[in-house]
Length: 115
Length: 114
Image (cartoon, rainbow over the protein chains, first blue to last red):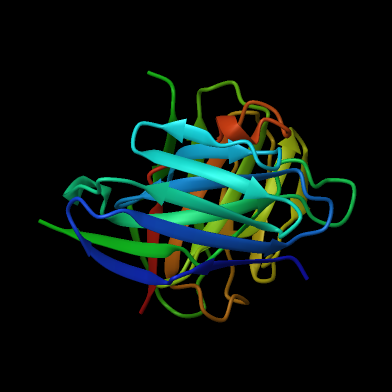
């Protein structure tokens, strides 16, 4: 069974702190790993990672994939209250011939940033 | 403006009733997806459709049914066979099945069984 596990499940920090969120996976026919931010309703896309060791960066957020360790991390530096959200990791893949676009999600990490 | 609309925003259902959640997109996307989200959990895939008139079961399809008669529409029916239907339901679409980084999510429907 395909599985994606995120840690920690929740995290409380103060503004200015740096956080690292973890995602590990066991998914057959791995295609890509994606990170999303979910504030109230619909998740919004952050990163898509397909190659190991290549960091993707967007402002204060960055992410990297380690295919050998079957894991990824999401880093947020100089956190702000607006970063408070649920961060979801998802892996595209799965058994069978129709794994394109099929995502398995982790439980999410609830990040709370206090002023 | 292009996007995905889901209706209704909130839905209440009595036990034993079937209900249908609407999902419409005007993005000209080929693939559409239905997810369920429970508190403290990530999204779980219910059904997905890569092309009109075709759909596949996801990880938790039991108690649900879908149709894809038009490219723009992918309604989800929650049947009385679904034991714990109270959840947040999200519809999504991608330009084509492999373009997962183009995935748009709708605003969601919160279903509560009374």
